[in-house]
Length: 193
Image (cartoon, rainbow, N blue to C red):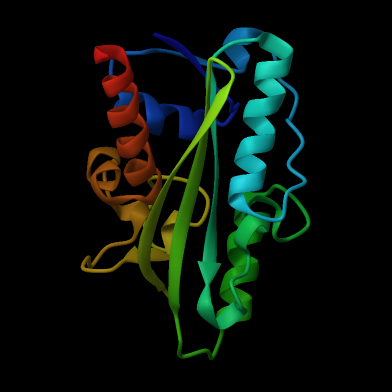
């Protein structure tokens, strides 16, 4: 089965490709010759993911999926949330991360979660899958793997941030991995029926 993953984010693509394996022929937007950003004007992860798959389906008429993910911090009333990728007013991950650390200074409640919602558009019908990784925001950056807020997010039950973990370790517990697991199970069921 051929699927377009509606992203130009190379890090996301690598993560998802390692999860999905070789059972499905995965194409990125770049593979389709599309390098523009797809509009994300929704107020929820679900709305943004849906907006992206509808856009791809309408323009390419191909089965596709898209995710929208973000970091929600309790002490910041759920920020950065859907604005995670542009929290500082730019798409610079370093500035976004530094703004979070700045706002978190002197705050004791460091509870946070990463959330992913995936929209799958299959033969014109839409399905949703989600995943959550609970954890805390660290006081300092640590690690060089991953991307985005990974250097300041330590998942519950672990002593290391996502950025200190190998891709395979992160892919066992991350929000995106949990949502992808549900998506892959669903696709395997469809193929078998």
